Length: 153
Image (cartoon, rainbow, N blue to C red; front, side, top):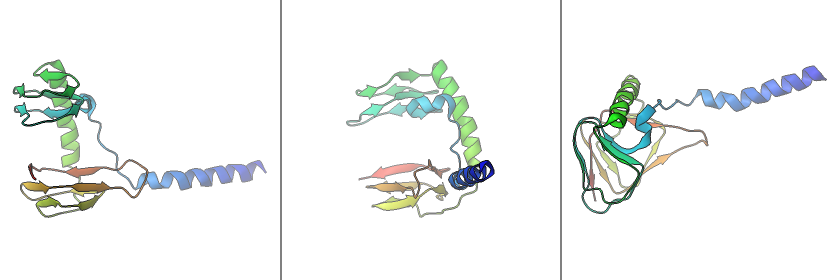
């Protein structure tokens, strides 16, 4: 009886944990996870009306024109130095990943992207909406490196 219960528990644990093996783990962002908007090299600026929840900062450049931020503004201080170092580690980890999807440079218009690692050749344009779709309740990640995005309305 005890052996049957143990076997059932082991089988159930295996069934529940096997899906986790198929999903990648997001990198540890360290101190950069505390920022809603962050730049390691360059200014961070805002035009128009924006509402950000979280810290905003730059490790090497001014942070300007943010009127409505629910967080702390950081301009080349200890928090930004730590965030820049941690972000470099995360970037290197992600940059070593092998892409699985290669969409065109025109993104959006209701496009649906599944979890995976994306590679877009050159700069990309985001028009209207893009949806990140998950087939699972488990955390999945979408990665696109390197990419420069400009937003078109």
